[in-house]
Length: 279
Image (cartoon, rainbow, N blue to C red; front, side, top):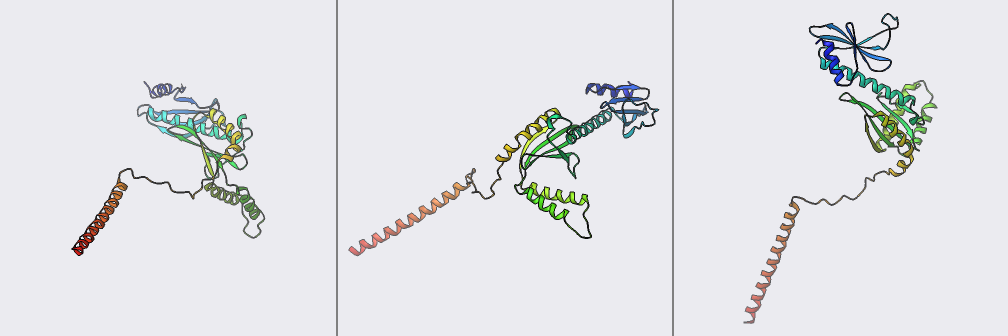
């Protein structure tokens, strides 16, 4: 079998479609994008891997395929397809969250994290937010969802910071990017005192949108139930499971017994002295 036939058979076992045309293998990712393998050595074997627009004539002036990898085995080829399909899925879900394309999250406005582009958050309830982080684990995208109840004074802190920043005068004017970083710092500081509910990690993104919709509806109720944990509480009594405390107790009992015996000896001596005096 040829290199492409081996790759096609391996992809078919993974439930991934492919087709071969000349010296190129095409693997569709979406309606708009595809992966292309172009054989560069049939004997080694080896192939260049490209990401390209699907259903575009190669003579089209706007056509451009981007080289993303070179593979030298069937295993490398299958891994490359899985990686780029997962990346495309992550991008699609992030776009759906940020643009609110799904009606289930139509009332939520997600913002992309300034430092982590694969993390988005949306304000919910009175003073809370939904945090969604999408990572790829062993080639499979996972979306982790966290409900965060921010401190009661969070809005006041933001208002004070806004007043100081936007009303500040002077030669050193802050750029929008500088202000964004400062607000990120304030937000990160607030997260230290925030209460959290971990809502789970999802590979089924249809279920993800159902969970986000439910979380938005339950936000105020969850906020009211997430009470701060009091750091000042009585330490629970720790019991010695290995008998060390019992040894200490036994030693104390032995000491008490020794003291009692000593007292008895003293009493006996006193009685003997009294008897001698009587004689």
